[in-house]
Length: 264
Image (cartoon, rainbow, N blue to C red; front, side):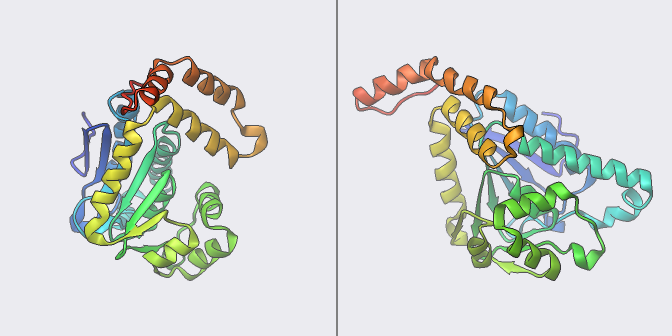
């Protein structure tokens, strides 16, 4: 797969597509080329029937993503045109993640700040280690956040916590994140990869068409009513009942064995 950068790693194994942010010397800060590469990886995983679930994580032991690579701002995000190009790359990457039809999991170890938290928020499930740290330091950098990003945070944690996060620009612990609803689970650092792998493997073994239809319906439930793609959701549900997997699921249940789903 031609990603266009060595700062992202893409690999797949046992139904799981791994997207790894690979700039550990900078705590996996997101560079412009990483934003450009993200949609390529996600599109490849979306098109690959062998990939059932996508896990995003950071290389090394210290960070998921520490935010944007600020060292690039002077050269790539100072003039108006550069700002537009840089922001467009980030928006395209986030849209690719939001619109992924396959389940996505953020495996968060250590630092998850700014743009890293924005990436994590756009995944379906977030599991972090007990040493993780979260923050949105925009108010200490003079940055403006787009409405869509703030809306996503409000949808996840509510307006009170969103204001605390943005207004303070402070750091929050893994337990703070759990209480706020930023993450689904907090697990011991030594158990993080094992727990995420177990969950991802479980999802990968389930019926892909059912999982896809469920994701569509759940996402629609928190969307403005006039924007809900109910026709597409109905079609996805009908596809489940018309599938070979539905037959396989019934047979496996009756035969008391594990089903072997094919996604068709």
